[in-house]
Image (cartoon, rainbow, N blue to C red):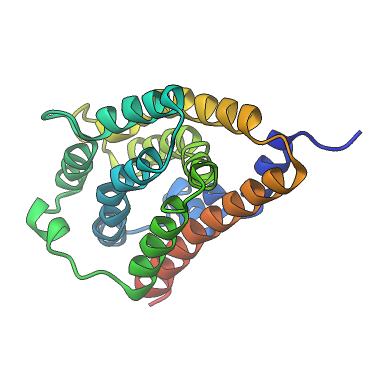
Length: 224
């Protein structure tokens, strides 16, 4: 018996899993200077700020009301109110000792801009299932990534204040729900072989864009 759709997608994503990247491994081992994490925070804010647009792009191209409602809930969680996720990321930066103006005004590395552009391109596909696969490739990794980051921040950098780590605690739980709902949609809506292969490929491309983002940060700030 062949692999299920979820197994195929998860295998594709695992080849470029963020937690396997040397930059995140150095984080979890306490080998990064605070200044390096601060530079990372400034670069990753580009993805945090753009993520709601990834979701809204998929939403706007979906003609299935039930699926749009799931995407809307995701989008609302990202952007609504004073506890919106970009704001939570800025609070993390402040916990590192980096002013939020330094984060919002940071010049993006070419690799960061390219990574964001690639994810925007995938999520803007006219076939919303392609975009959904990209969202899954991203959000399926986040609960474990958030937990690992938070653990490293506490153990090696003394950062355990609830305000500073709120971005991570929120995503440890929220994205468990999101990744489950996204996979449920993909399983239900991708029956034909060509449709399944298309979403597997899209998930791999999204994972690769995130991996390349980390490589860019490592090259610019850690290797130097």
